[in-house]
Each structure stands twice: as C-alpha cells, then as structure tokens.
Length: 229
Ligand SMILES: [Fe+2]
Image (tube, rainbow, N blue to C red):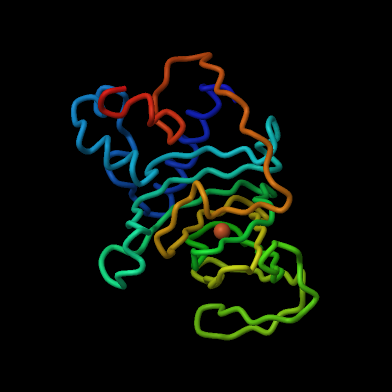
C-alpha cells in the first residue's frame, strides 16, 4: 500500500467527517514532529492503538475489502475484571460505496456499530461456536431498542442514526450501500491485537511503500515513533 494512497484515504475520511459535523481530536492531524514533541502522549497513543488505521483486508483490494478507521479512545481491557474505570472504547469508521469488511467475531468485545451518516450500512450476521464455526441456529440481536430474531446469514440494514449491538461470537461483515457511510463503534475495551477473529484468517498486510513524505501517522507507524525508538 502506497503512503500517498494512505494519506489520500485519511483526507477523504476527514472531509466526510466535516460534512457530517464530526470533529476528531487534534492528534488526528499530528505529524511526526508532534509525536516527538510529546513522548508521554505518543506513548498513550501507542498503548491504546489510537489514531488512524487504513486497513486492506486483502492486499491491493482496498476498494472492495478495506476500511478507514480512527480509534478515538481505548480503555484498559486489563481492568475489565475490576468492573470499574475506563472500560470502554470508541472508533470512527468510514466505508466507501460497496467497500466490505469481511466476517469476523470477538471473544471479549461487545460492540455497538452505529450509522453516523451517509448511505445505508448493511451488516451480515451469523452466530459462531467457540472454534469460530458458523452455527445453524437463530439468534437475537438488539437494533437500538428493538430485539431482532435472526436466521443465520441475515442482513440488517442500518439507516443513519441506527445502531446494532454485536455480542461476542456473533460474527459480522458490513459494507456501505448506495454511497459512502460514516459509521461508529462504541464498545468494551479490548486488545485489538488478540480479539479480532476473521473468517477466514486475514493474510499479512502488504508493507507500506513510502512513495511520498508521510503527512499522517497511522497505527502501523506508531512503534517507530514511540519514546526510545
Ligand atoms: Fe467487530
């Protein structure tokens, strides 16, 4: 994935956010010098996996299988057993027309996926067993305040403003339909490095081709900017 392509995707998401009145925190615009100027903040961003993540689920197929993500906040999942504190997380998601995030499930995280604005947002769902195998059974999912009773593989369409609660072991794929969608995720804190199970497992991401100077910092760049790096 080219650096210029990553930066262009971030610009596109920022202008879509602007259009829907969503402002991201100032560190969304930080460059490398801002990270170096505040090592404590940089360490916090690294620890939480905060900020930009331009994801290609299939290398080279961003338009069909990609997602632009900005993680605004991430609590500490190690505190979940204490039952109090910053146990929540929030992400902004931007899907372009037809761009699909493949089926995946979580073991720890319960999340609400929210259509914040734009086109329709379609979520395809199936319940899976402890090994990730799809179950041939109906299951219940909360859409805002209404409980839905769904068959395996059912699709739920979210209009702007609507949300769906996804519990652990409810595998979900989603995509924007009829235009681009700004979506959000409100969830339990979790470790994204160990709580995303894709069906099937994802290939390793393609390396970043530094074809142009970097304008934005992404989660893949963070380890290089952390204090002492
Ligand atoms: Fe998810």
